[in-house]
Length: 359
Image 1 (cartoon, rainbow, N blue to C red):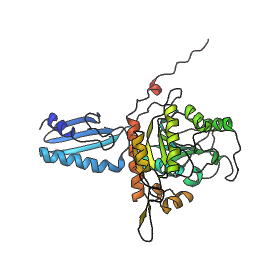
Image 2: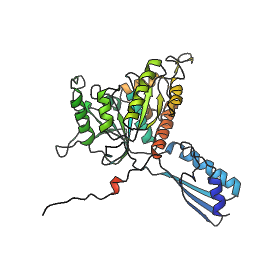
Image 3: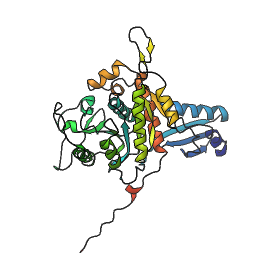
Image 4: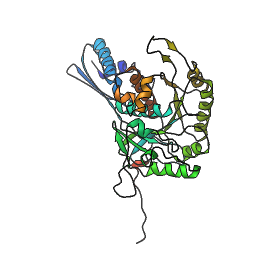
């Protein structure tokens, strides 16, 4: 059995999220054939722990059946830093940033943000979340966290952590019932401080839960915060889709790639009778995705467990990791990460810093 035959078989294996064969994507790093045994090293540019075993078995079975040879498959992930929009710089210790946005409030954007972050971690990535909604911070409650963050030097703060997710929010610095009555410039200034003065620790992905809307504050944030890609959350309802389109257009204007659309509350299944209803309509997210040539990343149900979970600091993906809903979130997380992996890599962190001093 020669190496060329093995590579021919591998060229027929399609990456489930990149939609190309693993030879052309250069995911196959090594093929070693020795003593009627083949050892294959495959490295993906995004985390995929949830399907790693299934994918490995599929490849092994195909090679074993075709070649009658013992086969060892080693699948791993290596996540690189990817470039953000022009005029911004990637944050220290943060490889990629994912903005989660919606054109209007009430569509489940913050709930989606935290479960997306947890899903990325479940797939094998190091993840943080920044609560960028200064007026209505919700991530502390959703993560079940309280109290002020620690500061070792009086200038920077340490992210608070639960469920292995690093987080920062204005909600840690003020009382939960204290209203924020700041004007736009104060809000953007505070958010930049939260982002830049937090000692994030070796994050593969930082999920940024943006405030709802597409006004001056949101536009300014998108121009100042480095974003590798954006995810739009909407419901199938016409009025929500109308505002979601505005969010998509906003990202286009600031040259942030839209990774796709998540349709939340797409269907409701009665817990008593099992009847399925499309309370907010149906097919809206799919039609919007086709219209703007972006991907519908997934559809999530209107489920009381999701709401109860975040209200009590127990998000679904963390508390019920093997549920159907968690599987949906993890599939979405793999799609998002895979799309980021296709973008241009950022190499600035590899360059040495040159400092000129007058002696």
